[in-house]
Length: 146
Image (cartoon, rainbow, N blue to C red; front, top):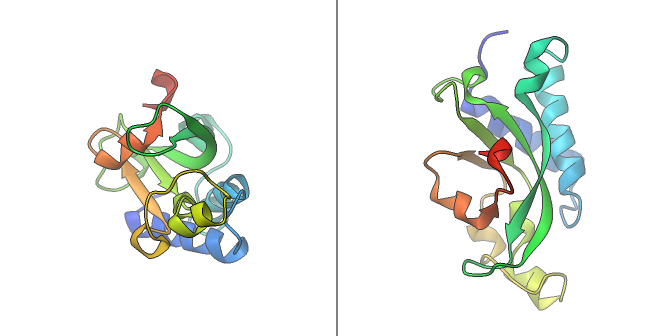
């Protein structure tokens, strides 16, 4: 397998969003489809030691920028050594459902917090864990997520 590109990750997120159009409370299914796309379309191996370098994981999203309260969320992550242009020892996160935490969902009382208008939140986030300021919106409950 050649290394994946950032465009591959973006296309995987867009594919997942098309497969699961209702993002509210479906972040786990969406993250699964990201992984499936990378395996089925981009040739990401799903046997051998490489499977330790990627997968769907549970994270927590802060209920607002200064809150200590969180909600459960799922994302896909992969070691940087498998993605072109990323440091080999870092994790790259693909979050294709973060925009569910928006103003409209708060107004509907689906969430008691918001990160802004849906249009202003990326539908597919690709985060570089070591340098991305957006990581502050997540809680990493241990070094295994860093």
